Picture (cartoon, rainbow, N blue to C red):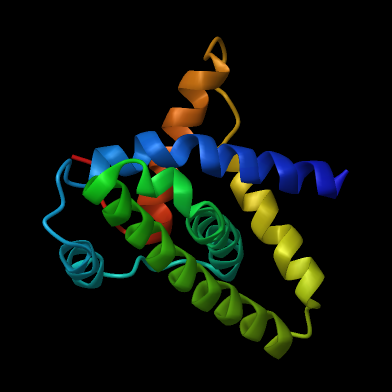
Length: 156
């Protein structure tokens, strides 16, 4: 059952990343370094350990998509490379968040698997569709909300 949830989380992350990033990423980045500067200027949100674990998992998945499928980004030219760079940076940020969540859990005597499951619970609470909301609309809403919460980047 938990494996199904992880697959669903990966699908939500990959399906919503494009629309969420389009809302927060300039349409024509000048260079990957401009995206890095924008991310560095964004203050880190104050997250609970549960949020860090869940956000970290999503951001690591996005980073893995960027490194595992470079051909998808290469086909989009400079815009694609800029997006790939941002997703790779999200992956690095996600690994740090997960490490912090696991360290916090270890200090409290909580096993890493429980910290991870609690993080997934946080994610699934935030991606539930509202009554009458289509799956596509829920995915877009949840993607933008999670991206904002997990990175501190506000959609314009």
